[in-house]
Length: 433
Ligand SMILES: Cc1cc2nc3c(=O)[nH]c(=O)nc-3n(C[C@H](O)[C@H](O)[C@H](O)COP(=O)(O)O)c2cc1C
Ligand code: SF4
Image (cartoon, rainbow, N blue to C red; front, side, top):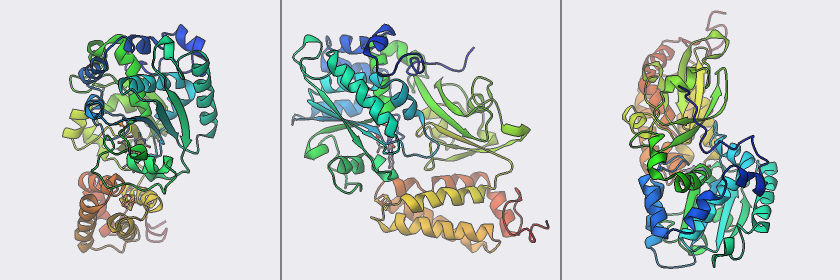
C-alpha cells in the first residue's frame, strides 16, 4: 500500500494556483459552501472531532483554540495565518502557498465566518517574494469571483484578506512576535498571558494558525471529521506534510498519513528512498532546529504525535533532516547553535547568552579541549535556557543538544579522549592524516 496520501496537497502541480475556475473544478470551495450553511459551533465541533493539531510546531488542538476565541464576546476578531516558515529544514508551507493558495484562503474564509471577522492577515516570510505575488493574485481572483470581499457567495458575510511580509527574522514566526511585526513594532515576543485569543492583533481577540492548519479546514468540513480522522491514528487526525532533507536519496515535501513509521519516511522508495551514496544513517533531526535528534534505535517509531512524544521525539514543523555516518554529532550541534545565536532577539539573558555559552563548550569538544566537568556546565546551561527563556526560541534551542547527549553520549566521551568517530573534528595532524 502506498505510504503517500495526497489529501491537502492533492491539487499541487495539477491546477493553475491562482485560478478560481480550476480550483472549483477539483472540488475547491465545497468546504466553504458547506460551512456557510452550518452554525459556527458546528464547524468548531467538526474540527475538534477531526483531532486536528496545529501544524506550526506546537501541536495545540485547533478546535480548542477556535472554541476559546469563540467564547470571547469582544469584537472585532482577527484571523491571522502564520506563513513565516523560518524553521530550517522546513519548506512545506511553501508548497501550499505556491501551488494551492486558494486552499489556504478557503480555510481562512471559513475561520473568518466562524468568528464573524471582517479582516484576515497572512504573514508571509520576506524571502518568499514570488509567492507573495502569486498569493495576491489568488486573493484578487477570489474577490472577483465573489469568494472574498462583500457579501460572500450572496450571504451577508463580508471579509477581506491582507498580505503582510516579514523581514527575515526567525523569531517573528512566534505568534506574538508576528502580531507585533504586523503592527509595525519590533518583532519581539509579548508577555503571555494575556493570550492572543483575548489580546491579540491591535489589542483585539485573534486567531493565529499555521498555513497547513488552515489548509486542512476545508477538507475536514467537506469530507467530515470521521473520514478525515480515519486517515490518521486515533489521536492524530489526517495527514502531515513532511519535509525531507539532508543526506537522503529523494529530498522533498511528502504528504503521509499519521501512522507510517520514521523508517518508512526515510527509506520507502516513494519517500526518502534511503541514504545517499550507499552510506548508513546516523541520526535524524525532527521538526526543525528546535526539535529533537533521534537515533537508529528509534527508526521504527510510528510517525504520530503520541508515539513520537513517548519516544522523546516530536513532529514539530514536519522537518526530517537526515544525517549519515560521516557527520559528527557535535559538529552538527555547533551549526544548530550558531543558528540560534544568530536568531536570538536578545530580549532575555538565558537565550542570548545561553546559546553562546553552549556553542563555546561544544567548540571545546570539537577542538579536543573539553573536560568531563563540561558535561555539568552543559546541563546547567541547557536547563536554565529551557526553564528561564522568555519565549519558545530559547526554551527549545537546546533540545537538539539534549537529545544528542542522550542518544550519542559515547560520541561526546570519545571527543574527551581526543577521538572524533566521524573523523571530522580536531586538526588533520591530531587525526593522524
Ligand atoms: C521561535 C518560534 C518560531 C516559530 N515559527 C513559526 C513559523 O514559522 N510558522 C508557524 O506556523 N509557527 C511558528 N511558530 C509557532 C507559533 O508561535 C504558533 O504556535 C503557531 O503559528 C500556531 O499555529 P498552529 O496552532 O496552527 O500550529 C514559532 C514559534 C516559535 C517559538
Ligand atoms: S528566548 Fe528571549 S532572547 Fe530568545 S528569542 Fe525569545 S525573547 Fe528573544
